[in-house]
Image (tube, rainbow, N blue to C red; front, side, top):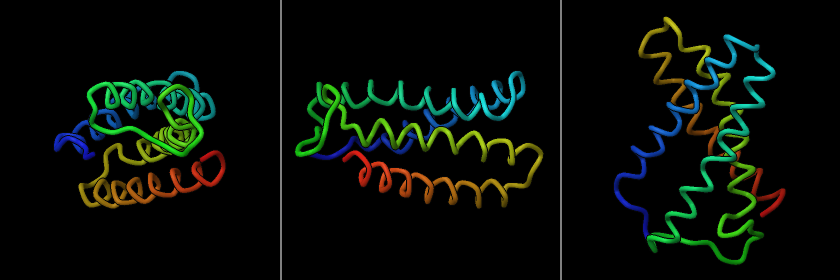
Length: 123
């Protein structure tokens, strides 16, 4: 099974939406609540994509602990990714494209780390 070619763009859209919500929460309620609620948002929304992917027969998971059709490590990994995302977004305001490019690479590494840690903990 393989992912559709549009998946990197879908990931980008989800990250931007989640980051925007997290940034707004930060402005209104502060850093701690922004980190918590952005993490919860990521953990709550991504399982829908996994459920839809299985229904479309794009991919599915085996041999891992699951919550329905979604692996627990995906849910935990998404929580960690989104929680960290809000910290990066606040460093982007009024910065150059070079800073955005660097932080994008940091986020890419952060995604890998989050899923590796989540898989070790609950996978």
